[in-house]
Length: 169
View 1: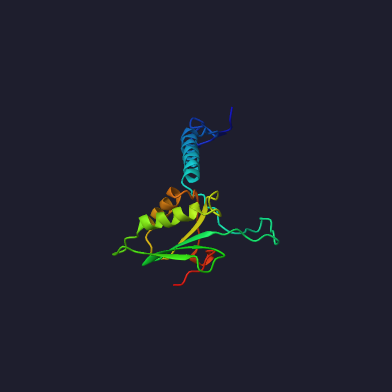
View 2: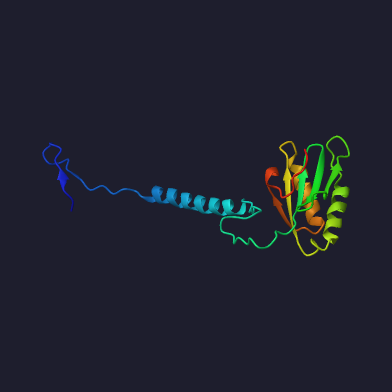
């Protein structure tokens, strides 16, 4: 039995000091927080986009003796699209817009299809793509879709300054 408190009324008002706390609301709160934590942890893993940066990273092996392979670079600007192959100065093609910001996707896929037929790129599936700030997100995705439709499954999105080919702007 616990200690009693004397209320001063002749011993009739003695109460027990030990108080039992109701922990059920605390357990309910913790179970809700745990469920919320687990659900948000799954959502954050599902909602992320895995992006592989193109180029040489700090963990990559550096081979100085080999010449780097040719890369296909695509630059989307507000007025046109540029397609080029690294290592070749004159191998840059400009694809003009159809007007009012409409890109010529058929001509773009035709150029990429011709490059895919080239012996240097027939077995490769990588291509690098960049866009200027004024280009809409829908056009960037349409360019990626066109590249995938042309047989380039590994589309890397990079900063325009990081492209292998330098385009005249």
